[in-house]
Length: 211
Image (cartoon, rainbow, N blue to C red; front, side, top):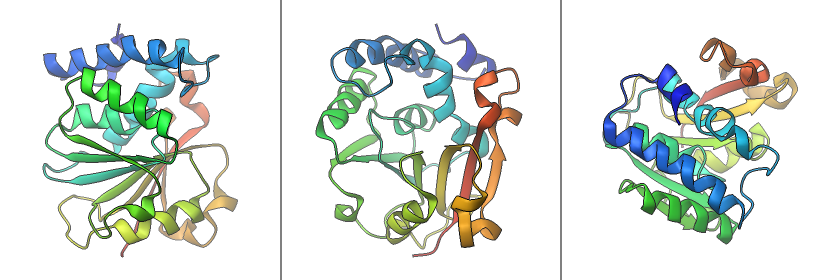
């Protein structure tokens, strides 16, 4: 059921494998009730959504004890797959839409994810300076994401990369990056997942931020 995930992450433990299998089982069930993934795309859940989320885990291995905010988490992507990958890190998933938070909460509970918390509301209501990284999956433009993320970035450094914002994006970004272009790393996802056509136009961006 998670063959493509295992192809790129072969060292997953048995509990991690089971957690991903639970996601694969539950997302279609919940999506039939509360639309958090395009119904035209739910059949591509493993590659287009869970593996896509895990591109962040190909870019960085978060140090144990790191705190990560998923800003605009929707139904829990990328936060829940990352919480499986990094069980010794803490994840806060934030979204303004209550029904999406409900889906993410139910799936996290079913998968036994104890390292995840949820915030129904705006990121501005979350603790400032508390997170090593903010991650996001194409929820708003880069300038807006940077503005929203910056106040929440901790001054304490524990990872190989300086604290900052990591996003999953698609298409041409040069105009969107604007004045942040020189300081932002853009990684094509086709190089991380070379056998999957879906990633040909997808990128990961990393922008270091100081509060």
